[in-house]
Amino acid sequence: MAQTPHERHETVREYREGPAAYAGGEEREHYEHVVQDVAAEHNMMVARIAQLIWTLTGILLGLITLRILLKLIAANPGNAFVRIVYDITDLFVAPFVGITANPTSGSVELDVAAIIAMIVYALAAWAIVRLLWVLFARSSARSVSRVDRTVTRQDEV
Image (cartoon, rainbow, N blue to C red):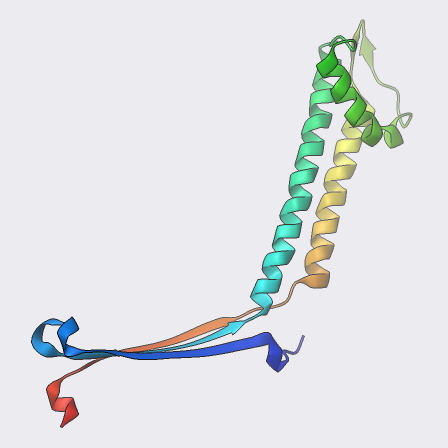
C-alpha cells in the first residue's frame, strides 16, 4: 500500500542549553528529527477492537466452560446461579444442540454441544480478528534522528 503525504508527520525540535546548565561553562545543542507514520495510530485502534473481540470471546468461553462443569457435577438446575449460567449460555449453545447425543451416567451429563460451541466460537473469533488485521491494518514506520553536540568555546571562534 503506497503511502500518501497525509499519512506521515515530521517534526524537528532544536534547542540549546546555555553555559550555566553544565560544569565548565560549555553549551550543548540538541537536534531531533522525528518521522512518524500515522498508520501506527490506526493500528492501535485495530488492536483495541481485536482485544475487545478476544475479551468478549473469553467471557463467553468461560461461561460455556462453567456450564459444562455444572452439568458434569449434576448441579441443581433450580439453583439461581446455575439457572443464570444455563439461561445465558442456552442462546449460544442452541445452534449446536442435536449434532450428537450427550453421554450421561446417572444424573451426570457431558454437554457435547457446548464443547462444539466453544470450538466454533474460538475459531470464529480467531478468523474475525485475522480478517480485521488483513483488511484494516496499515504498515507503519518511525525513524528518529538525534544529534547531541557539546559546543566548546573554541567552536565559537
